[in-house]
Image 1 (spheres, rainbow, N blue to C red):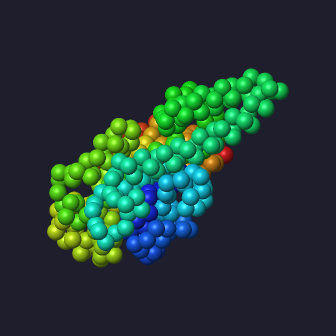
Image 2 (cartoon, rainbow, N blue to C red):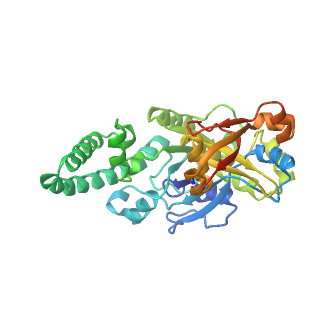
Image 3 (spheres, one colour):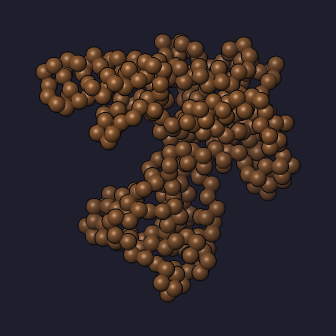
Length: 366
């Protein structure tokens, strides 16, 4: 499955700078509101050192990592849900993504304009959340109006849909996000069809300056954002967008020196991508052969036939067995034959839940 993340936030908080660093792009990132208008999309490889360890074992023609798609969405402003700042257009772009990366400015700089007149991470985060919620309320009200008509002449299905949407509308009218609404499997299917913005998981990115990124202890602005995110049941990480953009353009041998100078274990962008995976409860399995070693992305709790379907629908339809080797066993013993000789390769059936790092050969017949 594809991981699609939309990068959002107020104007001038560092969205395009972080997008440029992620995708090695050079889109405009100037110091004025709405520098970004059209959405920019970039495909980024998931950093996974396990692929480098698997490559010498299979000696493939190519190695294919899992990928993440990032969309740089123009800055939202107060009143976006009512069309301010081309808000309706931008909110429509957010509907297309799987997860939201919300960049919040957590540094003071007189040379960088702030559309709200000053830096306040919690206010800024709440402002965007409010605009998303107002857009959802409009969506729900329209759906209630439409469903009421259908329910009058319809049966149990239409009345059930109206009940669920009305309860969700009441929930959101009380200021709660759609993601906090408790629903069973049938109700969730109805809600999913609405494509509500506040149902999407959010990863907050505290964009700090170069001096603060080197400190283990959080600054007061970052601390405010982290506390807000935790209260909302969301995740938050710190990045220095300006620094990440500098790192992104360096040759690989110079990156390590640069990171060491700032006392950073890895590029913050790697942390962002991995956090996105955790946010959506994703994991990776591998396939390997002389043609290709490849990483595949699946949801946690995916069955073996469903994982096979990520490769090709025929694999899922004609699934027989999955021959599973654990990554650690394969790297430790060095070859597939050695793993099999040790009795560590297991044939798994339709009920097997794929685990992160599984190396799988699928047996199927169509």
